[in-house]
Each structure stands twice: as C-alpha cells, then as structure tokens.
Length: 331
Image (cartoon, rainbow, N blue to C red):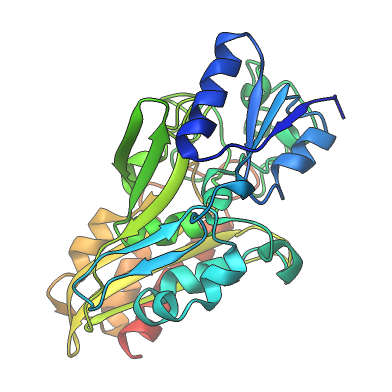
C-alpha cells in the first residue's frame, strides 16, 4: 500500500475543504467512513490516495432523526452503520424495505462497520475492475465484460460499460423517493435519489453526481403513511458476502386491496438502480391479482438486452417481481 496522510476533519465543511485543497495541489484524495471498501481498494492499489479524509470523527452523522408523527420526514446520517440502520425501530416500522436492504448486505462483521453513504457510493465489483484491468473504470478505453465473463453484468442500461450497481440500499432509497443531502466546500445541495446515480453513457468513469470535493452527508426520507407497505427481495449466488444477482425494492400504497401507487426498482441488473415506471403505472388503481402480478413480471423485463452469459437474469427477474408483488400485496 502506498504511503498516505490520514486527516480527521472537524465537520463536513472541513472535510470538503480538505478534498478541494488536495485536488488544487495536484494530490489525490479519498473519503473513508467505515472504510470497508476504500481500505481494500487501497490495499489492492485500485486507488492510491495521497490524502485519506476520515469522517469517523465528525459528530452526529450516524443518527436517525425522526419527527413526532408519521407526517414528518426522517433524516438518516450517512455514517450510520448498516447494522444500526437495519435494527433501528423507526426504520423497521416505517421503511421496512430499507431495513431489509441494509440487513442483507455482506456479512454481520461488515455490516457492523460499513456505512449507509459508503454502501450507496461504493465502486463497482466487476471482476475486471477489481483485478486491475485497464477498463473504463480504471482509466482505460475498454469494457472487457462486453465480450468476456459477463454472468453478473447488466441487462439494462449498459454501454459502453456493463457494470451493475452493487448497492443494496440504493434501490430501496430510490423506491422510497428519498433525497440525498450533499455537502461541499461552498455549502449544501439536495438531490433526489433517482437523480443521484448516473449511467455510463453520461460519464463512463463515474457512478453518481458527487463532485470530487463533495460528501454524501445524509438521506432524507419522505413521510410513510400507515397504508404504505414495502419490502426488499434479493437473490444471490450464495448465502453471504455476495451482491445481488437480481433484487427488487417495492413500495406499495394500498387502499385495502387496491394499489393506489407503486414504486418498483430493480437491483443487480443495471449500472444504476433500475426503476420501472411502466410497471408502476400498470399497478396503480388496481387490485394486485396473480394475473396482474404476472403481467408486471413480464413488464419488468421488457427491453432487457442481455449479454452472452447473463440471459438467465430475465426469467429470474420476471419471477422475482411476480412473487414479491403478490406476497407484499397480501401481507
């Protein structure tokens, strides 16, 4: 591992200023919250920062701040661990899709240190990128997965890179219509979760809209009414420490057995959390019957463009959406 300087900022503004100054001085910098991904990447020399800005010393970024009623928003600090998030009583009661997503990540040991912001902002786990190939994500001009080992790569939104976004919490946050509070040296801005993630055709080297001197500070969740049901379903190739082969975050606003509104977001199938507005429209105002759930499953894979070795994701996604919708509607 290359030698680096570790800095503990006083607050988020200080952290952003340190990042900004490092880039002005021609030095590379990286952020660490829990550090479960960043430190591994440093050991593998995927990143070689001169400066590591450690956010652990910043106070108050690991809390869930809820109002007194369901009509209030809930703010979750970016440094909350995934374990704490999955166990928080407010999150489990009002936003089960997020609690379930956080609780599905990796292993208990990793969830004890990994943070919400880190999970949302983690880099791709494509084996070409992680093994140092000079692909698009490593400063090259090729996506080796396009014609190589692509069993776990994108069937939607791919090109020129075919990575899938690895976060479990990201689809849940998009499904919940969350907003992200971002801190920079000149102040803060708020971005809808659905607009935070970027496709490779927009910027092949990046996965989100964060600037090099910005920090994901917190997530703001809208009020969750008593009629809202939600769940996260994840299919893996083994029981632990792996990312979703395919997953679905589903949020339904129900009036007895009729779905008023729906949000359906897929994971493991695209370079961003993949929202399905056509399926959502199909469900709105209707009773979710087995026939409608099957129709939604078909709609979920409309337009899929599989690569040579990942077409199996199509029937897997179709069946997962159908089953998850039925189970949630009948809960």
